[in-house]
Every structure is written in C-alpha cells, then in structure tokens.
Image (spheres, helix red, strand yellow):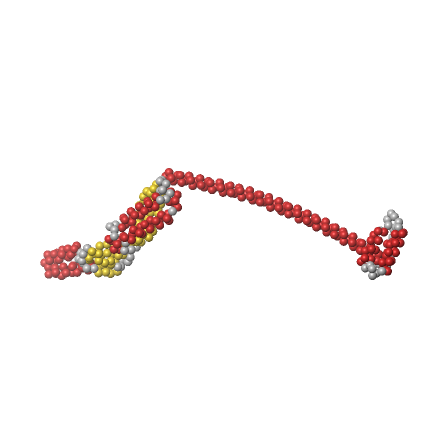
Length: 327
C-alpha cells in the first residue's frame, strides 16, 4: 500500500510541475489514492485456496474463495495456502535394518492443508517439518525389520509413517494422506548375494519339479501295471466262469437229451404193444433171459390191473427201468 501511495505522490508532483496540468494535480492525487485503495482493498481468492489476513499484526480472518474486501493500512495479506492435495518428494536416505544392512530408501508424501490458521502459525515451515519427520520415522521403522522383511512389508512401512505424520500434522494444520516408498536400494554386495540366492532357489525348484515328475511317472507306471494285472485277472476269472457255465450247459443239455430219450422209450413202451416189442427185441451180442422177461411182463400186468396203488408216473418209471435192463 505504501508503494502505491508513493506512486500517487510522484504522479501528483509531476502533474504540478507542468504548467498546463498544474490545476489538475489535486484530482490526479485523489484518483491515484482511490485506485490504490481499490487495488489493496479488493481481494479475489481462487477456488481451493485460502488467504490469511492479519489486522494490525494479529490474525483477523481467512478469506474464502471469491470476492473479498479488506481495509487498507489496517489489514494485510499474510499467508496464502492451497487446499489441494500436494505431493512432496522425500529425499533418499540411508537406513540400517535390524540385521545391520544399509538400505537407501526414498519415497513420496501426499499431504493437504486442512486448517490454514494452524498451517500459518503452527510451524515456521510445515513442509520441512513433515519431510524431516517422514525421514526419521522411516529410519525407525526400517530399523525394526530385517532385510528380507523390509522388502515384503512396504504396506506396513507406509501405514506406520502415515500414522506418525498424521498425528503430528494435527498441530500444523495439515493432514498426511499417504506415503509411498519409491525405491529400496541395498548395497552391491547384497544385490549379488540376493541374485545368487534367487538363482539357487530357482535351481532348487527345478530339481524338485523334476523329482516330482519322475515320482509321478513311476506312480503312473506302477498304477498302469496294477490296472493291467487286475484287468488280466478279471479276464481269466471271467474266462473260467464262462468255461464253467459252458460245461454246465453242455452237461445239462446232455442230461436233458438222455431224459428225453428215456422218456420217449418209456412212452413207446406204455403204448399198446410196446412192452411185448421191448421184451421180444433181442439185444446185441446176447439173448434175453426168458424167466426175467416173464417176470417183468407179469409185474407190468399186475401194475396195470391195480391203478389205484400205482400212479401213472410210477408206472412210467418202473416200466422204463425194466426196459432199460433188457436193452
């Protein structure tokens, strides 16, 4: 404001020094002062921004986005803050793990101003404060982990740093949204050892896979032989069953044929004149016994005269047996 007033005074002096414009010097001074007051008294705040106003050296107000009016000479624009999310690179630093291994770690921090008043008066430089706190917290977290664990626990490291920074940032009017580790770089000797370990692990997995394949192959071959033996024995069993069934069927057919032949002879004997033909028919190589024939005929005649005592089946069987004796 003082600079603008000085400019107004200079313009007024120049106007008064020129004879033709000397009468307008007062008006020039008045217009210059009005312009200076308008420029200093009107403040347009952009979206997602906050302006901190001090009145006579003390905090007075926070200007919201849009058109705002202040009193020149009394009010002063002290701080301007962006309310957007801001990324902040955390410089690389050397951390020592629990097993005394040095690691070069860097990351990126995302923060946002939530309270412009605390951001202005809570810390002289909140950016430097959160950067230093992020580095010290990172060293502390890495120091509690072994080398292998530090590579696997990036999410745990990020959460620990965010929790520590968020708690401290409440007094600085900022909120730490997240922290991400960009790179973890061990020494060259550790890298070579890790590469050798990875190579050995891959060779180990290859040998295990090969042995598992050979084992599975042996199991498959043994199982195939077992299945073949089972199928062969099942075939032999079924073949034996089939032979036995065939033999039984043949015996049954022969027996049925013999029974049918005997039944046919018996039915022929039962018919009229059949018994006399059977008795009189000579057998091959010998003559029938006359006495036996006579006894058989007498017995048959007796049974024919007593049908109540002998059924047709009994008569059939007895005559068939006697005929079989003479044949």
